[in-house]
Image 1 (cartoon, rainbow, N blue to C red):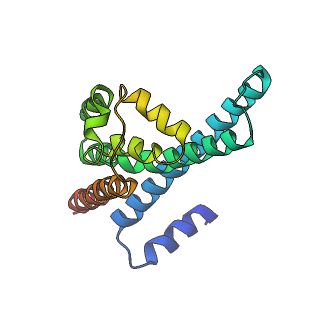
Image 2: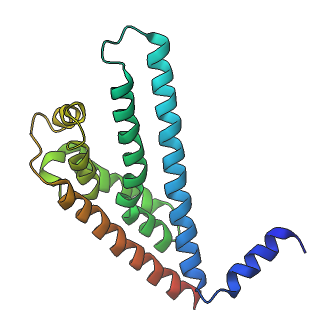
Length: 179
């Protein structure tokens, strides 16, 4: 018996349903891949800035602030996208999740400032704006000059509420499928 089969059988022995293991593994892979992609993108951006040179604000402080922004985005954006993961787990094809992704993103692109606290992706920008003056300027330019007045804790509550609700819904759908 190969090693992978043995590990899988050991996982099934644990008194946790297959749907819980599946959701946990999907969650873990999504967040890890997002973090890895963000760290990779960060390294490329910093490397490109270093090679290009002549940036007056390219220093240790701004590099560290941008690293925090990349990590925060890598961790929070997948949680904010859990409604789309739910659509992918509950539908049989890819058409509905792709259409839902488009409909989920369009309001954030059109009116991000007015959706902070209500829409999880817009709420990520609300958290960004509280990290540093540079990130506050970045968010202000994204929101067409609107200054963010929401507290980061309200934005986090919005993100995690949506994340928890859609994780529970995904588990319910997967349980119904396994019967």
